[in-house]
Image (cartoon, rainbow, N blue to C red; front, side, top):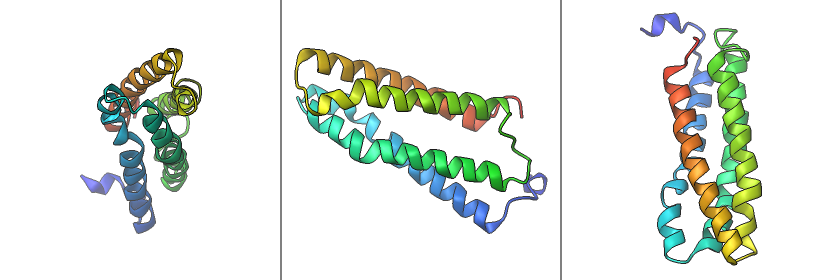
Length: 139
């Protein structure tokens, strides 16, 4: 099975492990957001998102691009699953900045509604991107 992946070096494997750890740091907190929000901790959710999830999402991108670069052209930037994953990543960043971030300083109903919408969209994008990463359509 792994014979087809002859480009896999120790560095690539380390990059892959770090990429997965960054994904866990980026998406793990998302699973507790609804519970925290229902308990009235909307500002804490937004702050956690800014200080942990957003930097982890940037790290996911950096490490993922590093893995594409280290794949010795086995994985191309033009592969369908890479392009769609990048589009999803950009959408995650935009949702994080415009829907989730405002809840850090605003506890009004409008900010809570944006936070709820942001959490829902983020959950959906998380599932779509994981689907793309696992099944790699077009590869």
